[in-house]
Length: 415
Image (cartoon, rainbow, N blue to C red; front, side, top):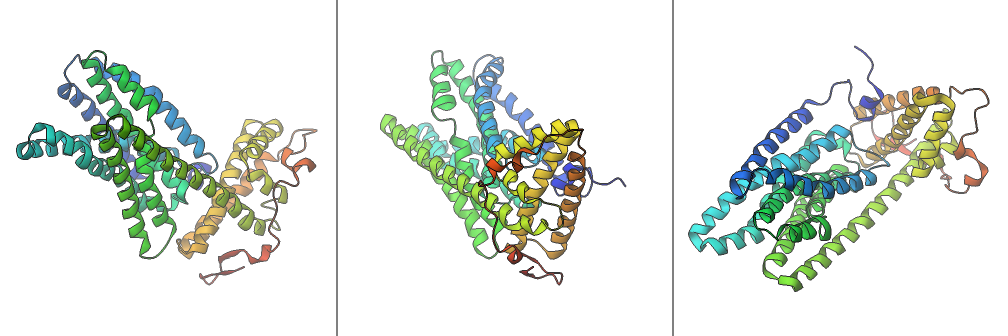
């Protein structure tokens, strides 16, 4: 059996094969999307070609949002297949499931309260619960199947936001089709959903993502409560937005827009704090590998910033070609994963057997990568992150011998 590829090692797989649950999830999501789009033609009067026009109007917003999410995910990027599953789940399973349940709920409520009250109740009360539940199911799926990939709040927000972007993309197609069926309405809808308030669904589901991230990185009974509270926050914010649009008029729209802006600001603060936490973990855990030669002291400064990592890859490309640049990228991601692995061991969220197996695989990849990007050409330039002007950027911890890890007896302790 061939040795695992660098990508497989970084994603925690023991073979080249993609995980079967993720492939199944991607396939099911695609089928649901194929079922959802034709149903729009039946629900909305007008030409079938309006589906294509609606998609063209919705794509620019989705592309910008996906780019923002991937930008957030640069320091410790998640596996591409998992990101695709998150997006496809929102666009397929969550969208079709919510469409069916919301339609049935509105029909039942119409019998009891009449058509107009039923529409208001469905929009303000039923839809937030249904939609956030279907989107949140993806995060629970990842928590159960790929829990080790969720290392902190950033990962939870990334998966949740991509799921929300996928959902919003296809939902916007429906709203734009309704606008096309009523001449003069479509551009106002595009302005509201695509320009003024594009962060809606990603923002709501991000709250569930925070709860799931806490559950993935902590132990104890509070994990379940964190998931429930995150979901409740997502439903409440979603219901606030829908209610403000439906019942509040312009003042209601302004209020809920400010509320969403405040939540967005909080999430940005969380992302910045989590990035600093990750940089701190790199500086805390990796110095223990300096004596072995696996990590050089100057590498710690390089790993701490995205500009430093870019300079390192450019240097590796100049000295060892494209393969050297790829090896440098693998080394950077593996070093980051190694720091996160030690952090999980310290929290007790990984078994000793899993810790040692994963550590050995990552260390092996880092050694191979170092060999690759140090195959220098004649008169190779000095690595840019080792120059004297960078020396004050990153401070190494003074007590390197106090790095927490697993002892060989399998219990957390001091090295």
